[in-house]
Amino acid sequence: MAHKKAAGSTRNGRDSNPKYLGIKVYGGQKIMPGCIILRQRGTRFYPGHNTGMGRDHTIFAKIPGIVRFDRRGKFQRRSVFVEPLVAEGGHSAN
Image 1: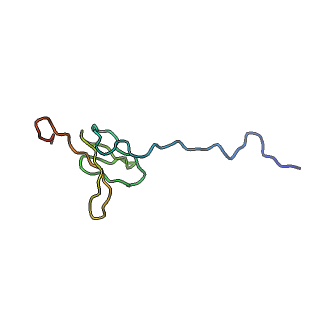
Image 2 (image 1 turned 90 degrees about the horizontal axis):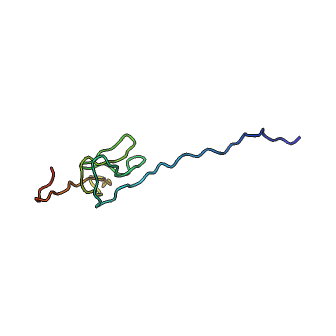
Image 3 (image 1 turned 180 degrees about the horizontal axis):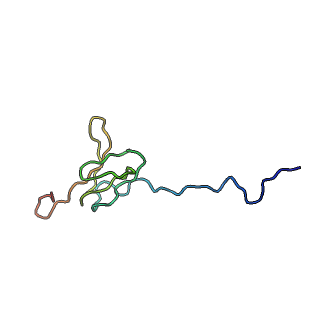
């Protein structure tokens, strides 16, 4: 006798939703407080000045300003920071 699984049984059909990781705001662009700069798995980038890191390693802005990327520290880690916007009078916001 030929063997065939019962109707409705399948081993396929499972697929996860996309996680939309990556850089959301690039260097030189303006950003507002609370806005996400990048979403990542693990710490590919580290938070610098005026940025914070969420539980899932998402980096976000703490102040309004300009996003900058660079390498810092002993191990030349890639970091992200927010440069404060300069007011009309020539003084920084802080």
